[in-house]
Structure formats: structure tokens, C-alpha cells
Image (cartoon, rainbow, N blue to C red; front, side, top):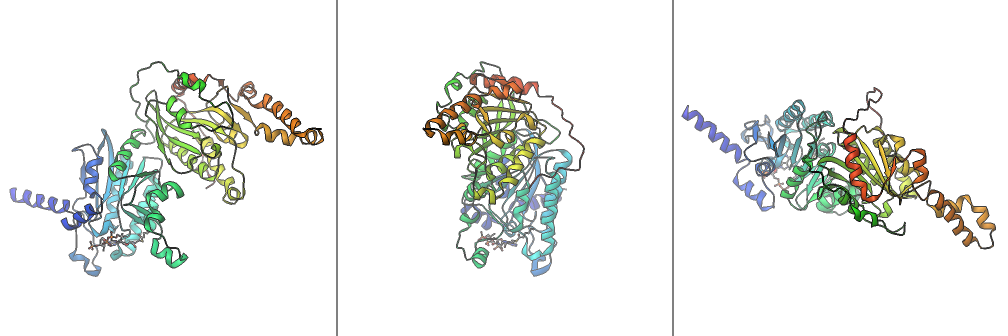
Amino acid sequence: MDKKIAILQDKINQAHLGGGQLRIDSQHKKGKLTARERIHFLMDEGSFEEIGMFVTHRSTDFGMETEKYLGDGVVTGYGTINGRLTYVFSQDFTVFGGSLSETHAEKICKLMDMAMKNGAPLIGLNDSGGARIQEGVVSLGGYADIFYKNVQASGVIPQLSAIMGPCAGGAVYSPAITDFILMVENTSYMFVTGPNVVKTVTHEEVTSEELGGANTHATKSGVTHFACTNEIEAINHVKKLLSFMPQNCEELAEHLPYEPGDESRTVLNTFMPQNASQPYDIRDIIAEVTDEESFLEVHKSFAENIVVGFARLAGRSIGVVANQPAYLAGVLDSNSSTKAARFVRFCDCFNIPLLVFEDVPGFLPGTDQEWNGIIANGAKLLYAFSEATVPRITVITRKAYGGAYDVMNSKHIGADLNFAWPSAEIAVMGAKGAAEIIFKREINSANDPQEKWLEKEKLYSDIFANPYRAAERGFIDEVIEPAQTRAKLIRAFKMLENKVVNNPRKKHGNIPL
Ligand code: HXC
């Protein structure tokens, strides 16, 4: 037996070496951790159990039968993160560049099946040269098997992808289907075709970083939700993100213990600028209302006119969606609508209540928006809110104009409670524009058109630049003192915690993609 155990230990040591010490050193020289080091930092100490350590590829072409590495370029297994069961795969760039072989794909698929059956999140740590070139179509098939399972798992268990090296070609579509993507600046990139192909086809000269680096995807494309300065930061973000989520769609996120205290926030009574066109940072209100330091912003640098992220309210995990008056006056456009819609759908999948702060002058006009599909994109947000069955509360802090009033979680589309601050203005449009249209003839025929316009603007504003017309109709449930916002929300979300909605039976809806 001793001999046999020694053989086993020898094999384990061999597997731990991946593609060998030289390649590990080269990985470190690039500022990257190895697959196992990443798992070490991600999982609770001593909790990781590896599955499939001795799997090798079955390929025989190009002399591959003599070049085999135990594990075949991916470490798979389960363990705990902050005490919660989590499944993880971590691609090993030291073995054929982490490329995906038939067996490498099988290992990932097996893990995904386990994660789904046992109802626990799946984390993918991606660092791969793509399809194993020596294997041809079986590798492509392996990718498709993963994509298919990603879709089956979508909405069942949270799926998170950290990109820690190359991720190119069709390989990008597995992370893209998962719920959140995190990228590491300077060492990771994602693109469908790399700089060489781009140069050949479009004659553009572009570096990998410019084309598909973390900052590009965090600011321009919105493909990544987080751009992290290094791998440890990315791993810590994965852990923090997970803390707001339940294990699966049948469960609720962990409710942290909370000691009730003085929930009034008097500073909010003097927060709103005097002039309704003056911007302010909605994050200041989010920080006041939610539990201290609890807000984790998602998609921070993309479509900054809307702010989305997770927070805690009296220990309860919530999703926050907020117009951002500090950026483009908080207007809704294509990118902000798509960004918020995806976030709303994630929260709804995983029973995370939604809190909406509304201060929106409407949808952004212009050819750019119209030609880029603001109609379809705005409809995504409308659809996402309308189909969401989680507890949903809106606080209108200032403007709620036009179609954006309807879209931003109005009562009409199923919100449970809508509060408004006394500074709320709920109307079809701003008073200036409204007066110009409906009093056009009177203004034009007046001795002093400018003065007439101001007079009519004031008239419209007196009638609609307040929350009371909407409150009379019951479209606003309560006009609240800003200082009481936190207290009201804590009570309201508690009241809604057993909410049940039975939507009509259907195969699935047809969200305008
Ligand atoms: C097999 C691969 C590989 C691959 C890299 N290697 N990519 N082996 N299949 N796809 C191996 C290299 O031979 C090398 O082996 C080791 O991994 C490290 O690669 P290097 O090139 O030395 O590393 P680096 O300079 O860091 O460059 C990394 C890289 C480059 C940018 C990823 O290797 C590269 O461009 N690879 C090919 C990428 C690609 O075109 N993949 C197919 C994409 S299409 P040794 O023995 O020297 O250590 C695709 C389709 C998916 O993926 C479709 C899904 C629908």
C-alpha cells in the first residue's frame, strides 16, 4: 500500500506542476497567478476539493499522444467561499496555453451539471488561448457544450466569469452568457477577432489592450462589469459580489444581522439643489439611504447616466437602479437602458428586491439614439421592470418626465410602492418646453412673448412641478420627507418580504433584444 500511495502522491505532485516549472515562472513573469494560486486566494482555506485531477486529453494527431499533462489545462472542483458551497473552474495557461480540448470541456461541463443539481454558484477563472488547435472540431464542440449548459444554468444558479488572461474567438461567448464578467487590467483581453485579423480585414491598427482590454470593455462596450487593477482585486470582487446573491433561484440572499437604530437622515432634507437643473451625485443619496459602505457599484464606468449595483438595507441584500443627474442630466439612452435592464433581470432571477431612485428628464433625443435603436433598447428596460416579480420600490427625488416616468419602475408597470420627495416633478415634460407647445399661440401673439412664456411656464410648473397630482391619483403612495427615506424603505421592504406574484403561464416571454 505504501508504494501505491507513493505513486498517487507522485501523480498529485505532477498534476500540481501543470505544464512545468518553466511555464509557471513565465506565467509569474507576466504578472499572472497560476490556476491553483487563484483558487487558493478565492476559496476558504483548506476547503477546495479537486475533481478530475488526472484527466488527460485523447488527441493523437501532431504527436499529441506523447504530450499529456494531468488535468489537461483546467483545475475543477468545489469548496466554500465565506462558508458557502461554490463550484470553480480555473484554466491553466501553463498547459497548452489553457486551450480548450474535448476533455477540458468535459471537465467544465461535469462541474456545471453538479453546480446546477446542487444549487450553488459557479465561478469560471478564464485564462485560455481558445480552442485546442490540435483537436479541431471536437474542441469547437466542447465550447458549444459549455455554451449550452451556461444557458441552462442561467437564472438557476449565479454564474460569474473572471477573465485573467486571453479570451478570444468564440470562447468569449461563455463568459458573455454568464451573469457578471470581471477583467484584470493589462493582463486580460476579450475579442472575437484579434488585432491581426482586424488589421487584415478593416486595416485598423489596434493593440490587444485597446481592442479588448479591461478598460475598453468597462467603458466602451460594457462587456465587462468590473475592471480590476490586479488578480487579487478581481478575486475579492468575486467574493463581494457573491455575498449579495443567494445560492440559487429558489433561495434568498443571506440577511445579515442588523441592530435597528436612528434611521432618519436629516442631511437629506437639505440635499436637493435649489435649482432643478443643477446636477448632484445620486451615489450620495444611495450612500445615505443604504447601510454604511455597503454599496457595490456594477458597470461603474459604462453608461454612467444610470447607476446600478448591490447594497444592503437593514442587512437585506437589494439591487439599486438610479438615474444619475451628474451625468447627461440622468437622461435614459440606449446604453443606460440596456445596462439597467440586464441588472434588473439578474435581481429578479435571484429574488433580490429592487430599489429605484428616479430623477430623469426623459429619453435622449437625436439621430444617434434613434438610429441605434433607442426604441428597442428603451423597451428592454420597460420589459425588464414589468416582468420583475421581486419586491420593487421607487423613490422619485426630482424629475419624472415623459415615457421615462412610466419606464422607471412606475406603479403602472407593477412597482409595489412609489414614494416621492416634495421636490418631485411628475409631468409629461419640463415646464419650459410644455408651455412653449401648449401656449404657442398665446405666446406668439403676446406683446412681450418672452414674458408670456415665463408666465405660462410658471403656470405649468405650479400645476405639475410637484408630486401631489400623482399622489391624488394614487400613482404615488406617499410623499415623504427626504430624511425619512431610509426608515420608510426598511419598513416597506420588510412588509414586502413574502410577496407572491403569479404571472400568466407561458413558455417564456419575448423581450425585445
Ligand atoms: C493549442 C496553444 C493554443 C491553442 C496557445 N497554445 N494557444 N495550444 N491550442 N489555441 C500554446 C502555445 O503553443 C504555447 O505552447 C503555449 O500555449 C503558450 O502560448 P504562447 O503563444 O507562447 O503564449 P503567449 O505569447 O502569451 O500568447 C498567448 C496567445 C497565443 C495570444 C493566446 O498563444 C495565441 O494567439 N494562441 C492562439 C489563439 C487562437 O487563435 N486560438 C483559437 C481561437 S478560435 P508551449 O508548448 O510553447 O508552451 C477559438 C474558437 C472557439 O477559440 C470557438 C468557440 C465557438
